[in-house]
Image (cartoon, rainbow, N blue to C red; front, side):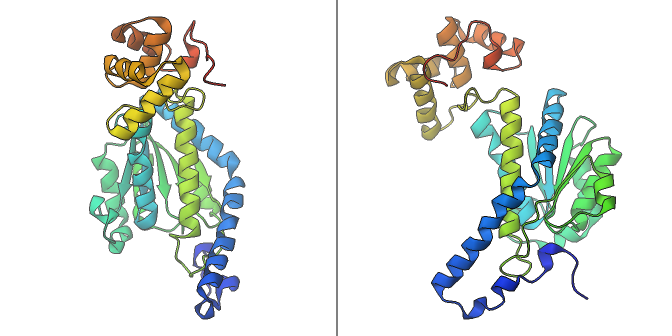
Amino acid sequence: MRDSRLTEQRNPRSQEMDRASARELVDLIQNEDRRVAEAVGEVRAEMTRAVELVTEAFAAGGRLIYVGAGTSGRLGVLDASEMPPTYGTPPELVLGVIAGGYGALVRACEGAEDLPEDGAAAMEEVGVSPLDFVLGIATSGTTPYVHGALARARERGARTGFLLCTPPSAELVAAHDIVIAPLVGPEVVTGSTRMKAGTATKMVLNTITTAAMVRTGKVWGNLMVDLQVTCQKLQDRGERILMEVLGVDRMAAAELLERSAGGVKAALVMARLGLELEEAQARLRDVGGRIADLEGFDRGEGVR
């Protein structure tokens, strides 16, 4: 019987790919990849709701928790791990949970996805609460580990979502606060969901977390002003942000970053409002970290 999951169906455009030249293979894969952005665009309303749920969770003191297996789990962990350096968030604000544990990030642990009770145990381990939003990622829609995790998360009072790349069942839609299903079509290599489905997954996760970070004041204009200087690359980026916004030279920007303990946002407020670090941090706390809401802080010439 033909598998009903879109991710497991054969792609008629690639059935002769084993006869193709290198150039023909590249063209084939690129032509299929062009379909991904369009499919993701079709789920804008669902992504919007997910952004709202994540923002509400953050405002209530909760977290965004991804849970997945294989490629889906790795992409969740990847997105979560990029939040602290980019937006200065605490590591626990966005968590990635993967079947088989973090060892599965670098070595396939396929059997780990088959046990729903392991997914449930993972939710207990991270202490899911009613304040959290848990997003399950399973491009096929059937991974037992993910379903077990989400069932336990709901039992613990969390709001839940599901990201998949095949048409969702009515039962799945009814079970969760939001279901996101970009339908990218069959893969070039049948069932190889690290390809189009993986690309779509990363696009959706990027959109959700980026929009949520902007909504919670981690971005001012289009600048990642909440980054913390922890390496040479981020030191350079922080200095360039201060140079552009404040119109200072690099030496002055470096000195200001040192006074602000490496916090770009605090450095901006200190310089623009003539404050010391503790007072600048207090003013930011009063407005929930949103520079745009600070009285007397205009955008200046460097931000449009």
